[in-house]
Image (cartoon, rainbow, N blue to C red; front, side, top):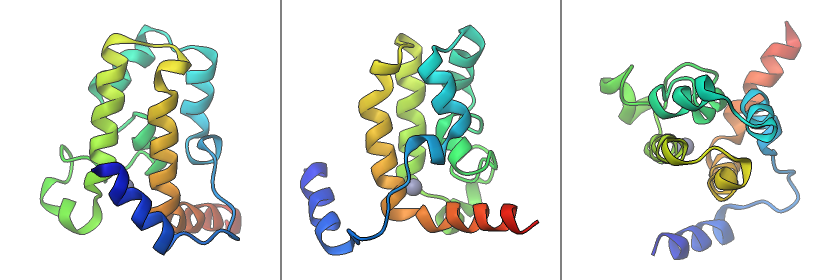
Length: 131
Ligand SMILES: [Zn+2]
């Protein structure tokens, strides 16, 4: 069901000529951590602190995507899909810690990010570069 909906969206919204961001570009810190193997502290961060998990990094560690920090603002600034991805990272980290365990989740999240939030990241990168 979710997959079908996703495919439909891809066909209507994707722009094939535009380059997609990789997980490394969206979450440079976490992509490195996950590839090198996370330690207990990293694992607990993923499990407990959605603000600092991979999804949180994509949002610039603002916690904007989570319900914990700015709950009333979520419908305006947040993204429920990202919140759900944050929860999935947390759930995965509770039981597993190798990169391959996170891989399907990462590729789903990256796909979602490229569809919905690529502009946010680009704007932020541009503003960092302009400084
Ligand atoms: Zn999102």
